[in-house]
Amino acid sequence: MSIPVVALKIEDFKTFEATFNARENGCVAAGIDVNVYREMDDANRVVAIGSVPSKEVLFEFMTSPEQQEAIKIAGVQGPPDVTFLEG
Image (cartoon, rainbow, N blue to C red; front, top):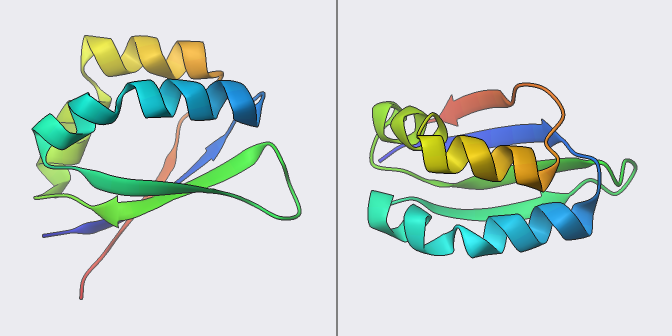
């Protein structure tokens, strides 16, 4: 199990949150358990922290056509900053 920390710049938190919540079933199906937090000092920056079976599973999920479309709808600005942690 890997622990990803994914930082994203977004246009609008409410739009991002609605799109993120709509993709919950896709996350569950991929074995991804993640929570999203908005930065206190920058309302247009979010950080997702959770667990995934492997780096490969997360990257496969993130690059899927469905997720790429969701990223556009969510208003994500630029590529994510992804860090993996070990326990």
